[in-house]
Image 1 (spheres, rainbow, N blue to C red):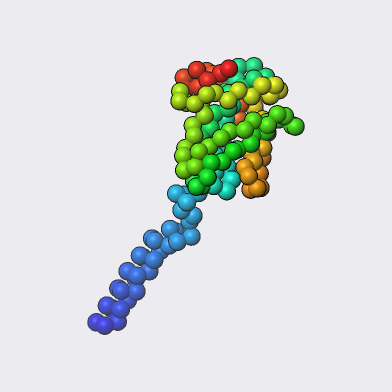
Image 2: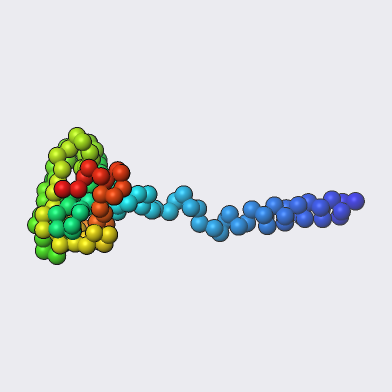
Amino acid sequence: MKARLAASAALALGLVMGAAGCAMVTPQATTEKYEPSDGVSADLGDLDLRNVLVVSEDGEDGTLVMTVVNRGERRATLGVQFGEGGDVVEVAVPAGETLVLGSEDEEPVVLEGMDAEVGGLVPMYFQYGDVEGVEKLVPVLDARLPEYADLAP
């Protein structure tokens, strides 16, 4: 009787371990970082850049759209250089604030002379303070989507 009970317990333990074992070796999907929207993201020290993209009709001039979160205690100036050796645009972000470029509350930041293809990617370099900068390939979208209809320059 004891042998039968021990065998049943061992079998039950084996079934539980076999059924739950796949979760032990499979990566958890919620821990994977991904881009949840049309743009790209980057982290620069105290600044978090989210959903960075450009809206343009012709690829020459475009409106920079992004959210910048300043987690620091001081005002930050973010430098954005677009294209190969292009102009640098500076964006001021107040301490502890979130700045949403492309919203009705903010003055649009127009990038002139981008020489990019609509539907393609434009290289952009982001720099803040003495933090090492980062280059990202930023999507260039047109105004066909309703959420971007009013953003083209």
